[in-house]
Image (tube, rainbow, N blue to C red; front, side, top):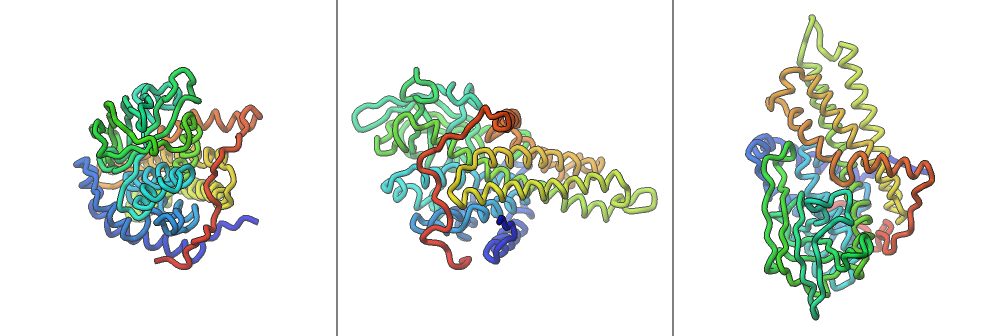
Length: 404
């Protein structure tokens, strides 16, 4: 029987992250957003709280908590701003959990352990200027020369591009094999030939670091091949199951932030002699936000329960990502509407919420991609094949006894 009640540990983590957001992010986020400034010290503080490896086993430097606790962390961070949830999504969901799933012991000790501790930051390099949803169209190449692979190409829309110490880079080792010719490599920023450049002028998530990664004759040790040659597509899809889970969880935080700000304004603002919360059409928007928050959380926790059991969750995670991100964008739009003209200015945070809400509808699989996936599941056209090296089920052997 499914039980979606939070444990005492999870309640403790939720309160801790909420307090952190109210103290370390909310007082400064408007300034950071206006300046397009990514505050790296926030990641250091999250590491101090042991939240950069919350669902990584203690054996590999993490805290050993379950995947729904990761969801709670992401929800509360996005209640502050999408930029910092994105940082955890990429570092933990896309990179560290992929190393946990696919890395050998040497790679886990060298790269996963310091990432789980927050001593090093990880990023994920899949998207290219001409290869987004169409992964097989990537043009980055990797050729084997002795004990190294030589990487050439570029990646774009890479979160933490200027911040990360380690990148998971996907490249073609065999050009004519399409999906089956893709491999994955652990690339260090310090490798000669690696350069990055931030993207400016973004609509939203302006307080986040997003940009391009350029690879010019980068010599990557053969021991940094993740998995086997040709397994890159499987690795990427498994990683996206984790990344999409954290994005869906974050969308719950955005909906909650929109709801909290809208309720507050409904009690403050009066029209026609009464609080605007007394008007039925405003109540309709509040009710919709409230319902979508509960629906989205249930979908996220359902996917998290499957992860905890070590079961395949591609369909459930896709559904959670699609529904919650669409609901987040709708909630942000309604929050601006409730605030009226004030919602159109940065005097209130709902303007930032609306700008931030659009990106999650696009990245980690567009809304259209997830719509197709869900239709194909329903029609019986899509059948999940077992991906080897599934994430370990929870509890880990090193399960945390209490919140540190």
